[in-house]
Amino acid sequence: MLNSLREGASAHIIKIIALGFVLLGVGGMVFMDVGGFFRSGASDTTLAQIGRTKISVQAFERTAQPAVRAQNMNMQEAYRFGLLQNLLDEMSAREAMRQEAVREGLLISRDDIAARVHDMIKTQMQPGETAQKALDRILRTQGLTQDDLIASMRQSMTSMLIESPLKASVSFVPKLATEALGRFQAERRDIEFFTLTPESVGANIKADDATLKAYYDTVKDQYQIPEQRSFRALVLSVDDIKAGIKITDADVRAAYEERKDQFKSTERRKIEQALFQDEAKAKAASDLARKKSSIKAVITAAEYREPTTVEQQGLPADLASAVFTAQKGTVLNPIKTPLGWHVIRVIDTIPARVQPFGEVAGDLRRELESDSLHSEMESRIAKVDEELSQGDTLDQISKNLNLAITNIGPIDVHGNIEPNAASSPLLTTLSQNKDLLSSLFELMEGETGDLSEINEGLYAVFSLDTVRPTRDRDFAEVKAVIEKKWLDEQRQAAVTATVEKLVGEVSRKEKDFAEAAKEAGVVLKTARDVSRESKVAGINDPVALTRLFDETDLTAVVKVPTSNGIMLAKVLDARIPEAGQGKATPDTEKQWRTQMEQAVTSLYVSDLRRDTNAKINTKLLEKMYGTPADGQP
Image 1 (cartoon, one colour):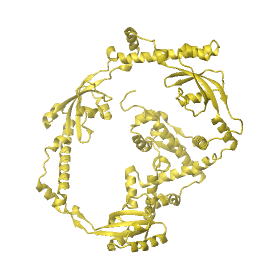
Image 2 (tube, one colour; image 1 turned 180 degrees about the horizontal axis):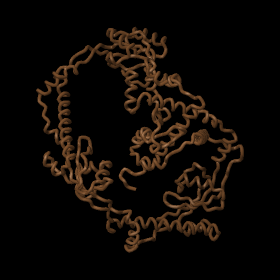
Image 3 (cartoon, helix red, strand yellow; image 1 turned 90 degrees about the horizontal axis):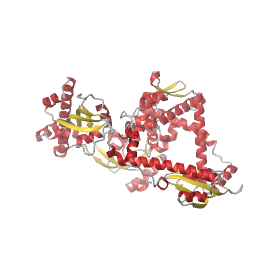
Image 4 (cartoon, helix red, strand yellow; image 1 turned 45 degrees about the vertical axis):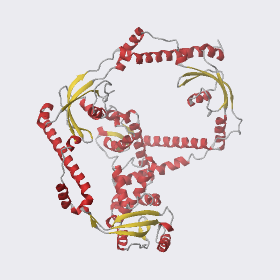
C-alpha cells in the first residue's frame, strides 16, 4: 500500500494531503507513533512489548526526545518528573489500540486520509509555496520521512475511530443523575473554624548556640560544599582569529568572476491568484477579474492569495507553462491542480539578469571572510587534536602553537562558582555547560581532556589542576539557615501537638470549640451559607473547603492542613435541597461527561493491555535514564 503511495501522481496527492495533518497537529501528538518505531530488537533493549510488537530504546528515544526538548529538559530530568513513563505508557496504549483495530478490521485507507484533510490544505500553504515545498519544509523541521508521517496519520485516525464510540457511550446523562448532581452542588453549610500557625503556637520557642550546633551535627551533610575543581585551559576562539583575516578587493573581484553563474537570476513573474474548489466559481471569477483588471477586487479574502514573485521551476507544471507564456496583465483561464482551480493574473514580468559586481561585492566579501575564518579555525582545531592524540601535555601544545594557558575555577559539577571567586567569560560559559562539566569531573589530577566546543565559535581543552574535596561548612557560615530550619521544625511540631491536644479535649467534651480557640489564643471565625465554590476569608485553600463538605459527622472536629498551618473546624449545619429541586449547571455536566469519557477510555485501554499481554520494562527505563546527568543521587 505504501509503495503505491510513493509512485506517480498518487505520491504527489498524498504529500499534499499530509501537509494538512502536520499543521493540524492531530490529537496533540501527531508524531507520537510513526513507522519503524515498533521494530524488534535485542531483548536487552526492549522497553515495552505489546503482543508481538516491541518498543526498543532507540524507537522510544526517537519519540521521547522531541517531547523532552520541548519541555526544556534532558532525558534524566524527564524521567525524574515521570514524563518518560507517561510517554512509554502512551506509546504502548496506542500500539494496543492499533492491534485491536486490525483485529476489528478498522483500516484507514488513503481515501479516508484524503477526505479528512482535503478542505484544509488550501489554507496551510505560504504564498508562492508549492505543496511539495511546503511538505518538504514541514518534514525537514520535524525530522520525519513521508513514510513516518503517513504511519502517524493512520494511527491517529485509528485511535479516533476506536475512542469515538467509547465517548459516545457516556454522552447521555440521566435526568435523575443531573438532579442529584445539582442537589450536591446546591448544598450549603454553616462553619466555625480557627487556624493554628507555627508563628502563633511557637512564638516563644528560641534556641541557643549550643542547641543549634548540636542540631547542625545531625544535618551537616545537607549543607556540605561539594567537590570543587580548578583547571588550566587552552582556548581557541573565532574572535581571536578575526583580526588576522584580510580579504583584499582583488580577492573579492576574483571570486565574483569565478562564481559569476551564481549571480544569474532566471526570468520571474509576479502574480496574484485565487483558489476555488468549484470550477464554475473559478470561471466566473476569472471573467469578472478581466473586467476589473484585478483578482483581489472580485473575490473573498478566504480565496485570495497575496501577490508573490515566482520562478518557473518553482511552480507545478500545469501552472508554470501558462504563467510563463502569458503577457503582463493577463488573467488566465482557471487551471486545475490537486489543490483546486487556480485563477491567476500576471502582474509583472521580471527578465533574467546578472547582478553586477558592485551589487554583490559586500555580501561576497563577508562570505569570503567567513570561509577564511572557518578554514583557519578548522586548521587550528586539527592541530590541537593532532597534538593531543600524540599525548602532548597542555604546556607542550601551548608552546608549539603559541597559545596562552588560562587558569579557571574553582567550580563544582553543578556549575556553581563561589561568590568571592574571580570569574571570567570562559568560567561563566563553562558553568552553563553541564555535559562538559560532568566529563571534566571524571578527569584525574593532571589529566588533560579532549578539545570541546563550549559555545558557538569557542573551543577549549582543559587539564585538571587541583581538586578540593567535599567538605563541611563552618557553623558560623550556615547559622542563620540552621536556626530557621530548627525553628520551623520545632514550631511545626508544636502546632501538631497543640492540635492533637485540643481535638482530644473537644472530642471528650472537656471544653467546647470556642474555649479551644481561646486557649490557643486565636480568633474563632464563623462562615454561614457556604457553598462548595464559595470564597471564604480564612479558608483560601479549595482542598480545605472540599474536606469540610466531605465530613458527614456534624459533631466531629475536622483537621485541615493549610498553606500556613492547620485549621480546626466544625460544621454547625448542613442544608441539601429536597429531591427534584436540584439541577446541575451546564459546565458541571460537561465536566462530569468528560471525566466519564476519560474513565471509560482508561478502562478500555487497560483491558486492551491485559489482552495483548502488554509489558513495560521499568527496570530498563530506570537503568537508562534514572541517573541524573550530573551524576548526583
